[in-house]
Image 1 (tube, rainbow, N blue to C red):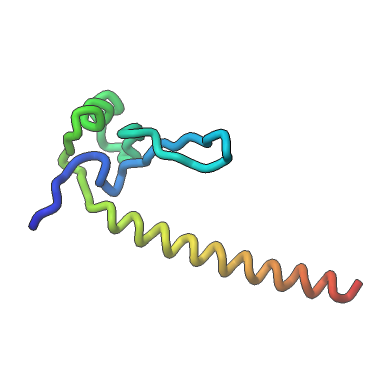
Image 2: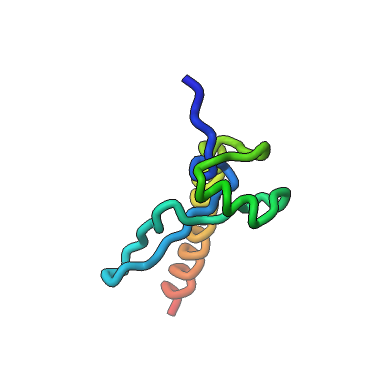
Length: 92
């Protein structure tokens, strides 16, 4: 079964969030923007509001995989820096 193509499930869609009073992030329903520079902002806004897609649509799973790899890379770098800090503090 082919996936329906609309902005909210596109690689280029950036979901907007707000921070609630308890400090948690929550999605703003159907609100976001297109990060593809090849489409006009007005056109992308219309597509988002009407749940349409454009010729630049790409599967969101690719974005999620890239984000996951990026988070793993950042955590690994943080781990290395924390080890360095722990080593410095150990000598004091």
